[in-house]
Image (cartoon, rainbow, N blue to C red; front, side):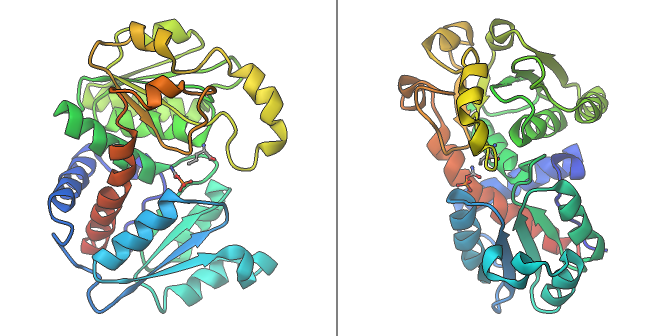
Length: 307
Ligand code: CP
Ligand code: NVA
């Protein structure tokens, strides 16, 4: 059975660390390994829009010696109702891995359930685990470590990023704080999973609606758009609801003096993050975006090595 990467806690702490080390090797030498030499192909399928994920997987697969087969599902038979299982059974005969951005986590699991090649979650409604590999790589590059650091994510605390910060951060032994308005907090089962992980890694977690409590002395501040893909109809209501949960200069003054700021992008300045913060000296968002490339090359290399 191949290894898949469907959610952040599919990797043990040791495996996550191994992939981050490999990611640093790719950052130092973009030709560090070329496991797709041939070229072997990787399908990268999008049911939702993307800039960074599309470009970083396309460039990364090419730099691994492979051929990136980038597919917008609306132009395929998937868009006309062909089943995930049948699509997967055809793809696996021709490609070495499948990377997919879609809506439901259960669909991702259905694909992995029948696939003989690794399946990688490039964002679902529930998780964005590839983003968190890049985030952790960027934090480690700037701070020299992960374990023991306090990482606060705030805004839409019920979305895919919130869930991935919980799982990936506790896997790395970090103290993860998630803040958002009541009724927009992480799913209870994912909080329970993060608590179990933290117990084994020395990390911890806090889920709160008190933004001041979440910001105070944090080493890493992270946020995301308040309106995720598919929620466009709720935009006005969400902007009201999340207004008190943004990273601005007041938030920065509560955090550690040397705190770094993450945003997965795309960013909406003046909403979830102030312009002077994202464009300021503590922002590491452009390194974070570049690290999508290195960390996903590392992930694919590692998954292919697992047989
Ligand atoms: N951060 C991120 O996944 O960006 P894209 O939606 O542009 O891929
Ligand atoms: N939460 C956002 C992340 C975008 C990269 C979304 O799902 O649209």
